[in-house]
Length: 264
Image 1 (tube, rainbow, N blue to C red):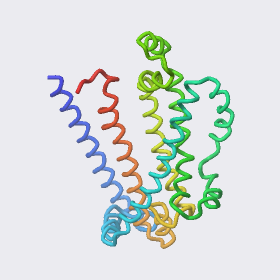
Image 2: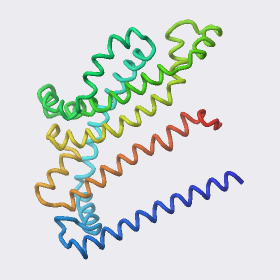
Image 3: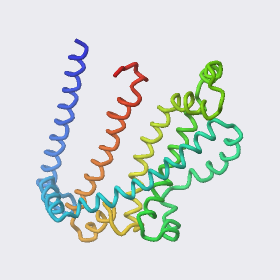
Image 4: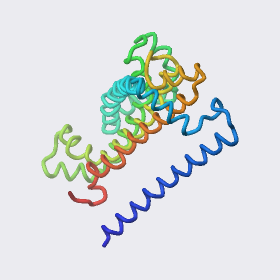
């Protein structure tokens, strides 16, 4: 009965969400066509859909998506490779925390966009340049959440592990601390993906890359094709939503199901 009740509840939630989207589209179309009546100020859903079909047929959207995805992968991979080990070191070892914390706290408040001039100077107009801006935005949420997770590992877990023969520091981190801190690490990665995606768009808008979703969004604005601009805006939002849903409905349910007592 509980399974049936939960399934019915999820179906109602999906229908309510779909209804909200339909109503939003209707209100948008009516307001754009009956009140504004200027496609430059506010293109309607029908104009946006026509622009989407045109861009899709030309292959522009797919090419931009591939470029932006490459930028995003470079930046997020670097953030994971740097942020998780440093967060583990700072959270597990108090001396490493005291040594690295001043540098981290000075660099962390600097906006990622402030690094764009150096990204261009160091890497030129390459995918690595855009990836570096994403890295700067994504590395600190990963690092801070990893640090918090390891710092919050209950001492009794470590003591129990030692009593059972887990005495080496490497084994304690691998078998005790990391599983206990994993929910916090995953939360940091989830936050970092959102921040990194916003940094990607901003980096491409400010000319770090010669291609990409953000770059062509600005390009079509210069051509006053606002319907195409809205296409890119909605596409960016949908991709961001898809990335977040991967964490919400896949990683949380399949890799962290033990938090809620679920079994396979």
